[in-house]
Length: 330
Image 1 (cartoon, rainbow, N blue to C red):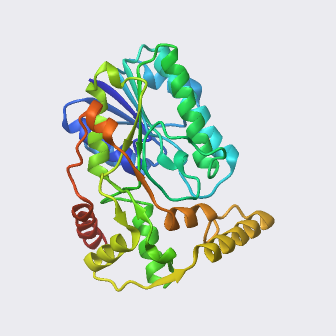
Image 2: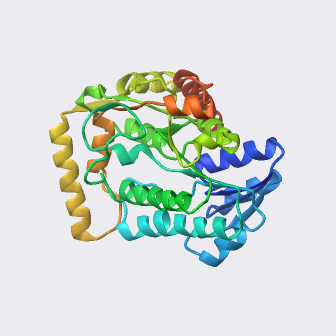
């Protein structure tokens, strides 16, 4: 099949593009990281540097495509609302327009469980669970607005499926584990609430499996949202101990009470806004929430309608990451 992957140079997009190509699909990947784009090109994947905000370009990219995977987004703990909106809402709107104008058979959209987050412990969250009255940050708010754009597209006749993968990790992870490693080496790895928060994670290959299943999912899956995780909740501190054991590094964490961490993060955010540097503070309230509050998702719907089964366990995923990291960094 002819397949377009937006965000093809991102962590998930790169892995998905390669998996699709190996399955024999004709893959076009878009993105802004031209070095990774060049690597994809070497493997036989068509790479097109692009900006989601470019309506004309997105329409052209959708020409002749049968399936469109929309992964591109601005995902960050910190940033301006306008930047989040342009990338996540306007960008999604442009992808939808391109799909509708070119008769794309199915749009598969990647959203986020950050839309559920309300700075409390929440376990076994189903896709239809009540959402917070106020989004946790600009990223979560604009990703929810993007979902609403996709919902409107479905109501207008475009076949769509949305997945919400939680905490992606694995070889090539550019965000979660590298931050933890850096903080640990600097002796400032925060163990908020003693690291007792119970969390869900998703190994990268499992997330790719979920996306591939969306291509052939039955009609009953259209218009639906699906939580995706390893379905293997772990305590944050246990995941950390295992990670640093596999890396062969001592864990240098600091236990911080949640109220103190939240207050400190608020002060850091205030200073960052006051001085207008645009640089992400050392600690944000959203990061404190993610590290200190538990969140697990119910993936029953994905199991039933997509046939999703996580193949790689959390420990196996951490093992794979540690082996890759040692190979990359000696």
